[in-house]
Length: 114
Length: 111
Image (cartoon, rainbow over all chains, first blue to last red; front, side, top):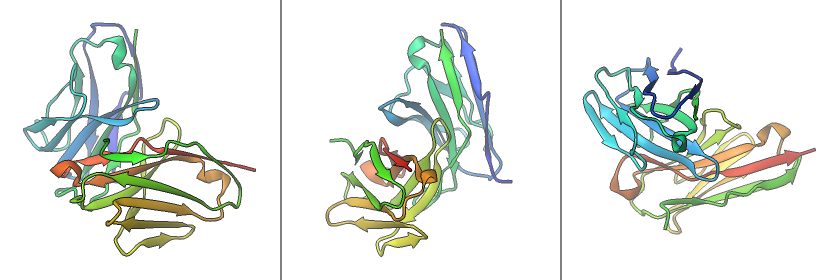
């Protein structure tokens, strides 16, 4: 089954404790992206990747890191989480070209930073 | 001006009603347009693509007006299960091929 797998589904942590949210897709998609969603603000892009070893900042990259060492995986790293990073996070992927291509989303990660 | 704008609502309608949402975009060079549906705290899912000629899928009709730079979604005979947030997505906005999301329009269908 074609899917984007995101883990964990829920995560509670404390300020400053490094964490990684994993994202994996099995569709051989070139494009992958991370979003955060906050009430009233909609989906905001954190980072995206057009292919292996190619990553770019989105609208809200501060405090986040990503890597794209393999085509299928695109982990989101918070080196020193802060309470303002408490949010609902989604990973998404799509095939090359993007124009006309559907985005596939993971099930989301609800992160709480205390 | 935000690149993709939607009325956040909520639109509160009775079952059986017809409801329409609009979404405006700022970049006339935008190339692809979509409507996604998102249930509370769930991942967005593609509802339908939007083509220049307009397209229909059952009770849902999407249209694109390039001259006025907006897309629309019409839902006929609303069901309780249509209650969700509807996200407008534009690709090619801002000169890039990165999808740009509107903030979403909330629809509540009541008995």
